[in-house]
Length: 376
RNA sequence: GGGGAGAUACCAGAGUGGCCAAAUGGGACUGACUGUAACUCAGUUGUCUUUCGACUUCGGAGGUUCGAAUCCUCCUCUCCCCA
Image (cartoon, rainbow, N blue to C red; front, side, top):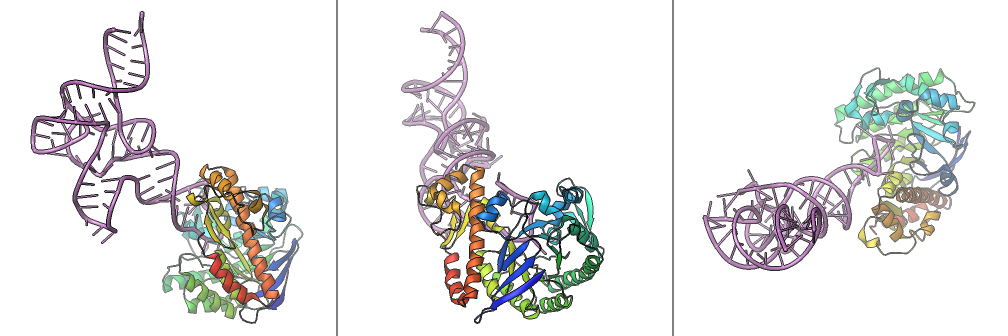
């Protein structure tokens, strides 16, 4: 794995680069569609490749471990072969599920004891076995096992969670060094900065994470209930510490505006369920603003979905037709919405990249941010 | 012609003296969704009012009662069964 920084913006911290993996080169900044269980919900890989132009997708350790299980993925020859996606893949560690499924788990020094949301069976994740599982899944980039505390955590709890994450990180790295890729291509390990909404904790965490000298670094525990301003402040604090010559991954973020603001603060990689989940639920992001396709106002609007849209669905289908599909609860609605939103997200980061390379990012960003939040 | 059942909000459908502006579904409208237990969830759906609350409603008209969607009388309409 190699990261090449091509250009840094003069007026901001935005960067454009290239991240090389054995499954392909990823231009940065990049948005990574989320494919939790080995499927970007509702979207064929053909569309992901050709229309959306996704360069890398996510999988999730927790979900894939529970179903289909690592044995089946191993038998298939790894996740790429199992799902039929030959581009890069990143797997999240399951740390986020420790947060989002908090009613079903118990944290110990050793790891996280949890119950399967599928059948209630008991399991344990430890830093070691999470690395092992991700070796078996075979993603190009694998993540540290962390604790993601809620956005409104107090300082004491955030400190405790950050310190636990750091101790787990040492064990993850030890396990990573002591094991090898199973399928003949390289895997890169990313540690995760925590620290909730506290500058001191974020700085300490970023320093610790940077000292581990991994291939790339991630920032977690943001967009989990805290105000956007706090999130931006934390990104800024962290990015002052994280090395410039390594990719920075902001986990789970976010809205189109969030992404542009974070790019300006020096973030290179993003993932978020928002384009697919909100797409399924009728919310479309466009370069002119946000549309709720279930709204009555689109009932007789027979114009194309998005005349500026990057995807074929934007020109193939009308607003009135898509509204009809959502209102009728047709699965095609969710598919069109997901394809549109993902194509838009990839278009957005590509545009950002082009403007960074052209030295015109900040001006473009300021204009875009105003338009992106408009309610159409 | 004979016998029976019924009419409740946009639709279906509970409620059969006060806790009823009226359950529950559906539909409609609006909102939420950020490392996916999510094609999910929440709110609104008689009028006025920011709230408290006020007012008008349960086929129509009249009556009983302190009080009626609920009881009585008549009218209108619908459906079912037998001829």
